[in-house]
Length: 257
Image (cartoon, rainbow, N blue to C red):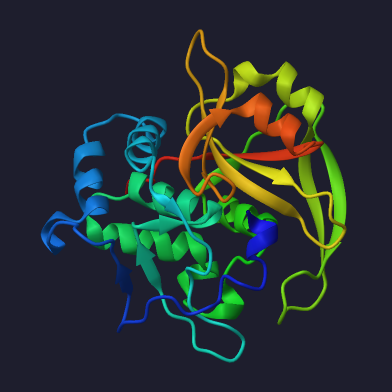
């Protein structure tokens, strides 16, 4: 979860030149990398919701791991791509980038634009806080805010990320009761952020909505407590972590010229 990752995501795990690809043992050759294969298989699906659903479902069972990004205020940032392990944020941004891509090159470009402001690979341009992740990806038209009845503004001053000064966020949040009342307005592929009760942190976790008729709403996410990517009931997650507010953004189709 984000709370556990603050201050840890910069630790070096894999280091290579340029974009650092990391793969688990036993994976196919480079031409058959899992993400590249999934991009190709999802390309024929009509909507980004369908592509997110297909790609994220295929990644279920992938192990959870923090410490996956490389860089700090002192260490140069490296652009990391990996499909063998995720934390909650890297799972969402990897799937989202793959759903917007048509090949491995466009995937790398999409992921760079999602993870960094203006796509500039620098530790200070990385979206360390999930509020900034959402705001940045709304501004660049990768996502849009999902507005539900009862939405309100919640102010927070955060300083949990070492190396950054205090920041004040005016967060667009949906109270739990409003979310549950309007659950039918959510769709598969929506990205939900769960507001932290800590005073110095904005969100503690994020994941994808998985919605289908005649079954409970699911959360598809990289779970630290379960140690892997999985689906679990949204209502159970909300109750277990005593969630009071969430924020939801909806991925958008890639604009065509």
